[in-house]
Image 1 (cartoon, rainbow, N blue to C red):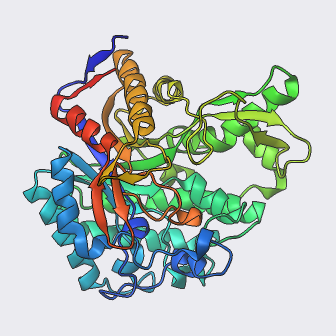
Image 2: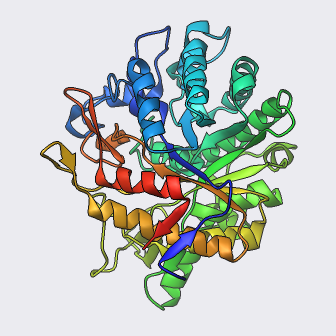
Amino acid sequence: MTDSVTFPEHFVWGAATAAYQIEGAVREGGRGISIWDTFSHTPGKVANGDDGDVACDHYHRYSDDVALMRELGLGGYRFSIAWPRVFPTGSGRPNAEGLDFYRRLIDELHAADITPYVTLYHWDLPQALQDQGGWGNRDTALRFGEYAHAVISALGSGVQHWFTINEPWVAAFLGHLMGLHAPGARDLPLALQAAHNLMLAHGQGMSALRSEMRPGDEAGIVLNLAPVQPAGDSNADLEAAAGGDGIMNRWFLDALYRGHYPDDVARLYGDAMPEIAPGDMELISQPTDVLGINYYFRWLMAHDPEAQPFQARLVVPPSAPVTAMGWEVYPEGLYQVLTRVHADYGPSRILVTENGAAYEDVVEDGQVDDPDREAYLREHLLQAYRAIEEGVPLGGYFVWSLLDNFEWSLGYGKRFGVIYVDYATQERIVKRSGHWYAQVTRENRVTG
């Protein structure tokens, strides 16, 4: 692989965000309460007591933010719709004011020659649905289908690219097993039922989208995936890695592309396995047009008899470079994920829908010099190109994130953006990595 590579013609260069992380205006435009409003306002759940009430104030500043996207030369912008903006109580009649906001954003993007990529669910479940059982309740999947239909009916004329659910693994396990994300539960059977119901929601969403999509439109799901490798060569570590791969990757990929959950994972979960009704797996495994893959770091698994519930834990090699999140920088992992998914599951089209890194950014003389993030992005893009060269149908790359934002339970302490946000003034500053990325988008080329 050379130090300078040119990507295929029509490769999409984009950036990604999520509604609760950037929009703010949580009590404006008829928006209802989400589980993240509740969670972030619960003492002790989010670092520094931070919340998404204002965030990046994108709800009011979207026009300026689209101008910055244009400055970066983006061809695509992946953003999420806030379910409680459309259905303040989770269902019923759509909120016209909420839909109008997204209509204005979509129009602004088209005026800037930027293609919208819409995610329908990025973790902000209406609290009213949580009060009825949330993702532990099968009915939530049906409500999601109604929501998906309402959104595409209202906005479909301006959107060709749709994703149903973002990272069901995170929503299910960080939210219902580890207690780190909303709604903050710690219950393995509930987490597994949530994982299944999130996949059911994907199926309901796909059916709803298909009913309104036009020729040339595409729809799929976004999964966070990682290569899972043993920390050592003991049988215990090998088993830990196999189990980790089943939980992280194969649970979702097998359901989508093979119509069943992996047998070894079902044995591992035992009595905690979710309730699966006739027809569920057929709904989940209906054909998709595109798979979004989010990649940040590999899972290096070590057996640990004290670790619950699976007697395994993630480790980072002592000498490995890490981001501000403590995540190992492992660019080859993106290549490994892309080639594995292509070989084992064969999706017709793949997009890298998130990839990026948090570092300790500092403003000096009105600029943010972040060479570590620039290097991170460069090395991962070179690995993406390597996968393309081996036949992986990768059609685009969306950096995470466009803006520094509310980083969930970590609040505002971790910065992933290629654009710096001063939360006190809402000033935006394009970082060095952002200027570098703009050169990549203009030239369709990455230089080492």
